[in-house]
Length: 344
Ligand SMILES: NC(=O)c1ccc[n+]([C@@H]2O[C@H](COP(=O)([O-])OP(=O)(O)OC[C@H]3O[C@@H](n4cnc5c(N)ncnc54)[C@H](OP(=O)(O)O)[C@@H]3O)[C@@H](O)[C@H]2O)c1
Image 1: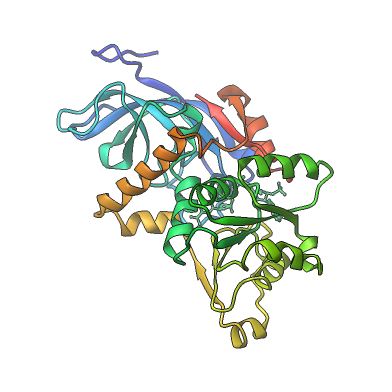
Image 2: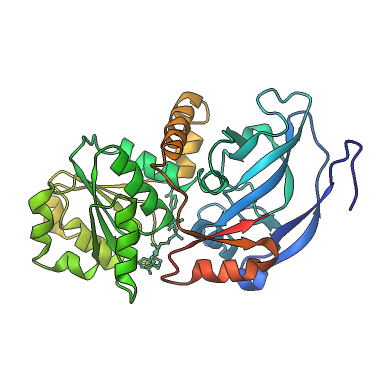
């Protein structure tokens, strides 16, 4: 490998795709050149990066935003700063950084990125928390804060509650005294999953089938009907979840894992005046580029929760970079219940 004058390695390994398609077919581990450091650039050694559904959709070419090809996969992760350009003031060698925007291409051993594409995170949080901080916990935080004014004792219902976002919702809500009703798909090892989510702070964990049952009344003996529903799935799951929303409550759709449209009974609009909204973290970041105060407030709040042990990394499997095919495959399988995190 080439060495620059400063003694820093100038070649990296990266998971690259040159065309869109199924990840197992188009993603390859390749050597790539690390570009020269510009005045406002930062040279980063990547430490760990998860495989998220949006990364898969970007590779498939089905996501709302696509990186120019050839592209390095991955939008989330944590890295350590090796070197900074002469006009970089806010970062120094040794700092930990995470992506400030999407499209960074985090599945690489090292890279040179413009300073404004990075956000400094404290080094006293666990590496796996930092690697999974910029997308899912931020999404959970915003959805709990921005759509309904929730007070301790209020409740929230969500589907795909075992997803990365879902686990963050459970923990952030718990820390604020908000009750959660968590919907998951039935599976052979359901009791284990219920136990895991309950240990995170879930008040109720129910299957999609249970949403339709009269026993749901029992849930609402101890907690109020939810003012907020978080929809990651679409299709039937969403229609059933919506039944339990309070009149004038809000359902926020942020994922479409079932690849089915959201169907809403007319009666939900006429007799309960429910509000249907959507959320996209990428858009929120774009709209808050000049509002560093809101970004810092959110990141500080999340790091505080992590330090207090109230927000942990999602259940995960750590995978060495060379075994990336296993990680891609596992990330696309149903009922995996474990975030694949590439060790770089
Ligand atoms: N809008 C935003 O800003 C934003 C931000 C972050 C994430 N997201 C989206 O949120 C979703 C979850 O992301 P994540 O990183 O949290 O995912 P994740 O940790 O990989 O979990 C995926 C979840 O989807 C569920 N699932 C998969 N296929 C399903 C199906 N056909 N029907 C119902 N549930 C299904 C899985 O449940 P099983 O265990 O039952 O398979 C699991 O709960 C993705 O769609 C992602 O793109 C959106």
